[in-house]
Structures are given as structure tokens and as C-alpha cells.
Length: 547
Image (tube, rainbow, N blue to C red; front, side, top):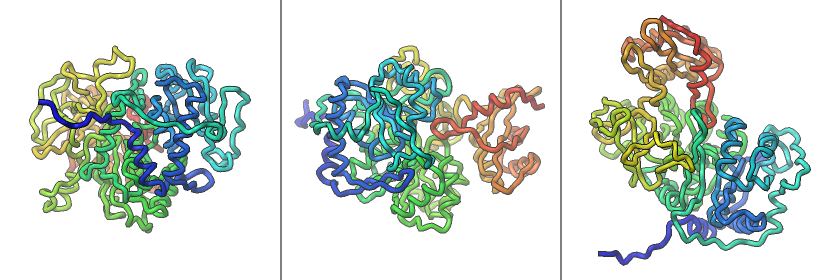
């Protein structure tokens, strides 16, 4: 029996039009190098339609890739909708990748145009000659007075016919009408950070983005709503800002874009001054911001979503002490759009004591509607019990989870034979459905034939009051093949010895999990997405051998 429901496509243009019509007066805020820029959804919508027309004027193909090389700004948000709503494909280039990776990605995606913030042009321009399909570079002034992101005098634009000024382009354009008929048409694409091998492209459809946007608006997700003031600290070039930019537009929420300066103090000032209700970023961001929130009015905050890597329990609880809110841990990846699970304490657990609730918050939560998960024995599809103890590889599937990589038929090892995404995360699941990340498969340490979770050891180390950051990696061992080593960044003004660390950890874990060595470092190296780069540390200490 067939239904009687309309077959209306799930595309981004109705989301855009709703914001244009209902929320024209709602504010969009962008922090620049010289101050705060303010606009609203009405003016933003006018400019977005002009941008759609400008893409026609530039001769961009009907399904051409429109790349961005930009910070979180209202102009970047214009591109978020103008490209897909005009039938093109938004392609956000990760500015933190190496030059050869960025060049590879632009060529692999066949980008036709790159919209770049002026402060980032010196970084981009040396690569353009190697980008075979790029015909235009459109420069957006992201500073108000042509200053760079550091506040120094702006860079002179190269005398090249490929260079186009963004405002001049819009001034000469006619507004476009938006209508996308096929919900399975590509809307945007992002590439993985490529820590091993070439970066791989994930192509999001209008349908997947629409469904992910609805998921971000669920109360048991991050619950973006019209009353919110949303500040995505996560970059717009990383997994579509975790879907928060789309969700803010869909809900008609005030949106605060932090621009180029992601230092702790400016972020704390924005939270207080703009009365931010929801601010989202990776753990390394919130480690820095915490100290800047002391003494500030953060009463507007209702949620601090955090993802990208496991959130140390100590960090989450420190936020609860300072702001009254623990960090809201979520999980996802570029391949999953990315939001898949959120760690809310359920109604049936509200009676639990604070320590037990903190343990629940230290998980990545339960999966969202439409997402399915399973935890399997490594390299198999054999599911393990949900006992909270047995660990295995986390695998997922769903309508906004990728089923392949763009033009990479060779990249099959990320998928099971029955079509599930192999996330590379090692996890457990308890009887209530709460998923706890144990480690990344590549970061597990095998000592004497037994596995050690580097992430769990790190979490305990970072609960030490003298430790600011910590990463645990495997080093060679004469006796055990591999042993864990702690790489520690002490709190400013503090010192910590290996013996002191072991004394602190001994009651907290099995003896054979205790680090065999400790290195004091100035900073834990980060990947392009702000995660700890353990590969860098492993390479750095590759010649070290312990007993």
C-alpha cells in the first residue's frame, strides 16, 4: 500500500527561504581583527542571492565545486548556502593542512573557484599555480580595514586577472532564484585530515545535510532553537562546523562567528558580551578558555558541546565548577556529517550521585535517531556484548553517514562487507546504550601481548592538578615490545617528576598500565582539526627504548 504523502525533496533552499522570511531581523555577528561586524538574516539573504548570481557570472559549472579558504564569518555563511542552493557544491578547504595536501585536495575535487579571506591569501596564493582547475580566486576582506588576522598591514593583492574582489563581484551581480529538485544531489564536500595517506573526500547530499540539521535541533541532541545564540568555535572548514551553521539558519538563532582569533580571552569575551547560549569546540580549545571564564558572567550558557576527541573527565567537571555547566560531550567524524551521539544524563539517571553522573557525562552518550551503531571484534562483524567492559571497533551507519569516498574506489578498508562505516574508534557500550571511547585503533599500546588504552591513561594524568595537557604514546621496550610513555605539559609555574606522576597514578590503574617514562614538553602537537597529534610524538621519540 502506498502512502498519500507528498514527495517533497529534502533540500537546503527551503531552509534558506525560511530564515530569509521569518528571521530577517535576527542578528549575525562576526568578530574581525579590528572589531565586531553586525548584520542580520535579511541582509545576509540578499547578499546570498547576489552571490548565487555571481557564480553564474563567473561561469561556474552547474555542478561546479566552489571552494572556500576562510574563517568563520558571515561571508563564509553566504557561501554555505549560495553554492548548494544554486546547484553547485560547496568545498571547504582546511587551511591548517600542509600545502601539498591542500593542493592535492583542490585538484582531486576539481575546484573551479576559491573564495579566500584576504588575511589567508599569502598562505593560499603560492599554491594556486599548482591547482589545475581553479580559474578564479575571489578575495573577501575579513578585517574591516584590510588588516591581516594578526592586525598587521594587509597584504597587497597580486596583479593577476584571476583575482576578483568579493564586494565588487556582488555589486555587479543580479539576485538568483534558488530551487534544487533532487535531494540526493551533492551539496558540499569535506576531506579527511589525511594523517595517513592522501586525504579522502566525503560528499554530503542535500538530503543528508537536511536530516543532519534536523538532528542538531533535537532536544536530546544539542537542541539548536530560535532562542539560542550559537557560537561555533569549531571551524567552518571542519565537517561543516559540526552542522551548527546550518542548524542556526534553520532555527533562526542568532549566530556569533569568532573569525580568525581563537585565543582564549577573545572567545571568553564573546561568550560574555554576546550572551552566547551554545558554544562548541574541540577539547584543546576549552582547555585554554577555562581560565578566562573565571569571574565572568556566563549565565547565558546552556550547553558547551565538545567533540573531536574524548573529553577528559577532569576538564568537564572543571567547567561545571566554573560555569555551572559540565561539558556536553558528543561524538562524530567527517564521515558522519558529523553528529552521531550526545552524552546527556537521562531522566532515569538524575537520582544518581554526582560522581556517577560525571562518569555518564564522560562517555560520548547514546546515538541519535536515524543513526545505528554496533561494536565488533576487530576486523570482523561479530558484535560484542553491551556490558560496559568488553571493547571493540565502533561501526556506524545511517542516512547522513558516508558509504564511500569521493573517487577513491581503492579506499574500501574503512567499510565492512555489509556496508557499515568502520570508525577506527575502540569503544565499549553499557547496558543503557552509553558508548565510551577507549582509544583509536592506531593509538592502542600492546605491551607484552596485552592492550593498554592510551586515552584512559591520559584522562587520569590530566586529572593531576599540575598537568595542563598530556598525551600517551607507545615507545619501544627491550622486554615488552611496547610500553606507554607520558608526554606532559605542566601547568604554568609547576614542575612534575616521573616518580610523582607514578605515585599519583598507581591507585588509579593496573600496575602494568603505568607509564614507563615521562617526557616534559612545551606543547602537545595538534592536528589540523585541533586533536592531539600522537603520530608527531611517536616520530619524535622513535629512537627511545625503555626496559
